[in-house]
Image (cartoon, rainbow, N blue to C red; front, side):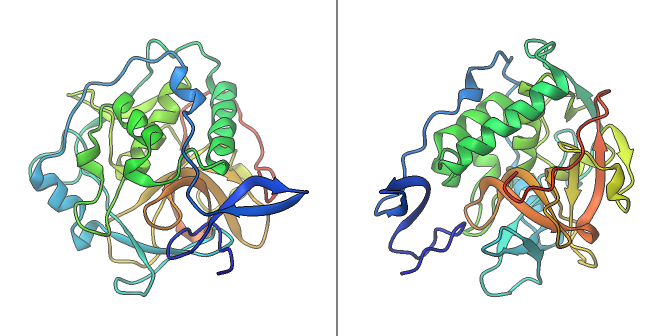
Length: 296
């Protein structure tokens, strides 16, 4: 069968971006074994552990808090109605300190004491480049079974059973990945205001840091926190990621976790300007302009 990156489902071979024979790219008959991420060796204090209740899980995976999307071969993501063939479902976890039956709760931001002073924004961009390079080599592929994702969840204190596969379609670990990247880079990340639990809820990154105009891309910078949702969709669900580049054509590339097709990956995904619900940053560095390279 022909190769079809970045989708790895229903194929006889596994696409590899880094395996060549006589300078010709080749495929693997078995999936590559994920290599340990170098980012797990950074100094960090693990967040307190918590697990969503069954009521919170039911709320996270309900229709009112679920988005459905399709990611094409170019990595561009389009939100679609429930029931669209080939669509991937993504829930949104409630705030750690939300009351029973509610999505929102009081949140705050904090900086990891061990990671503080590790370089701030510059270290963050460096760490993002590292995770992107690792992801292109297959280190973050495979969802729940991937040891790097499990270690990331352990560092943020979010239990794997809270964010994976409560029905055959759902997973929602984008906020855990966002919090982890900010945490290990010595930047502010979102926690429950009372509990201090690292948030697994993408909605909790709405109003994160300084608000940036979602309709003015000239003000956007690489690494800005971006909350995306389906424009016109009745779902309350959303997804959190990081702005990364603008190769043109109306699609802004974002680097984040639980992106692409089931079971989710760390990768670049494209979103159109109308998909951005909130953009913010919580660091003093003015940031870098969005690169125009499609491979960035």
